[in-house]
Image 1 (cartoon, helix red, strand yellow):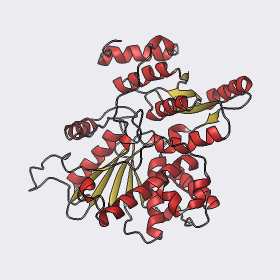
Image 2 (cartoon, one colour):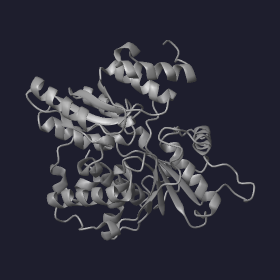
Image 3 (cartoon, one colour):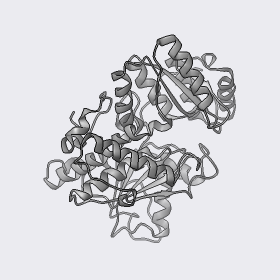
Image 4 (cartoon, rainbow, N blue to C red):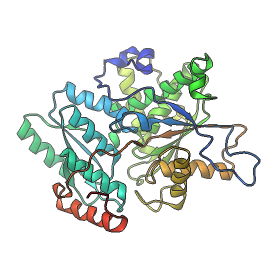
Length: 387
């Protein structure tokens, strides 16, 4: 399909892209997610709460990373690469999404993985890597530059060409364009509703005032903020604030990085189509929220556990590392009064892959440190049925 961003700025369509996503992803009415507030007469916060279902971007392995991978893997194929190399934590959705879709495109996946607290999802992710034959390079911390250099040299000798390197989270100027387009996609859904074309499908969805999204490597949040700012510059009747709820360490997600990423993304798009507005970081309605991260990456909080439980009861599958903390922030803001139901129309961006995990492979196929990690996860949380 032709992306809404490409329709408005056709020069950007010159970028290589592989179609991985089922777009547009639906918007679901989320009013049933939040509980009845005993101190209120109605369900809070809601004049309007909706969920953008990016958990449905791809039936095999979806979530927000797939929008970025359309451009990143598209460039890898266009450049004739034989392998891709990326980064993440043991349970990284991005690393697994990259491995799944790279394999499907005939590219060998290599991932540099950092430790995280034990958890059943991380163990399941590693089992999926084992089935895919992902080449894993485990490290002790978050700095994988040494391992990346060694892997690149080895693959260059083997293949005659270096692997295509994808940064952590798929977050660079190229990948972020996937979420600039996502903002245009939401605007198109609002516009179609105004014309009555999909009123039945979207209920009473209107232009959001605020968007809540998990902030891992910030590509999703920055891309959305750029897209909404460009739409506002073009006269669109929507200019939501994007609240990025930080779920990774501060050295990964921070304001200076967000500003740098925004500048590079805008520069890239303007180099392809000069009609794209010359935005600055000050034009973006983006706020990075830090108060929901602790006690650490991949460590559930009581609030994120409750958020996952509430959303699950309404048929929206979240998890405690990313989307659970983001939805916990939304819940906290309703209780504190930051969100006010008579005024605020809220869009929660579901970045999780809600479908079944890819098939599991033998733990013995993993590097020894990861075999030990999976064994510890199984000891703490129980081994999955059948293995």
